[in-house]
Amino acid sequence: MPDKLFAVAQLDELTPVPCPCGEARRAFQQPWNTLASVHLTDISADSRVHYHKKMTEIYIVLEGEGWLEADGERIPLKPLTAVMIRPGCKHRAVGNLRIINVPMPPFDPADEFED
Image 1 (cartoon, rainbow, N blue to C red):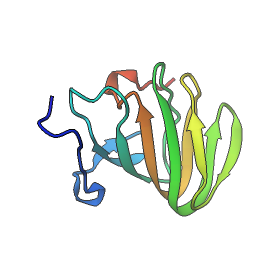
Image 2 (image 1 turned 180 degrees about the horizontal axis):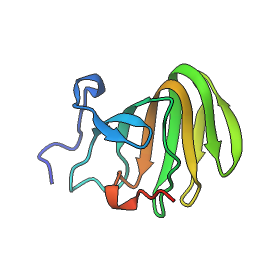
Image 3 (image 1 turned 180 degrees about the vertical axis):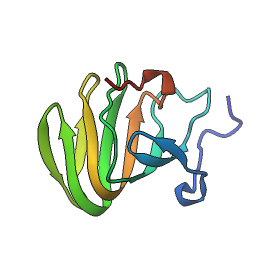
């Protein structure tokens, strides 16, 4: 458990890691945190369809336009669009987008699946 009862992350200073959507800068991935993490994610046009068995995600579009493919539906995305993606929903974002992704519980690479 941390000494302080709060945590701060400067998202644009975190090291990006590859993900099915492009690159993610993941904050609050500490063992004491079981609620949610926050990712600054840059979506690339070649994002891959994937799903999670346990995790819910909220995507909040910051920049760019495109769409989210969610269980075969196409949802238009533009700045300030928010989408909640529940467990089991096969999804991918398409377009050049920058989003905030809020995974709940915190992101776990073992809970990311592609068909």
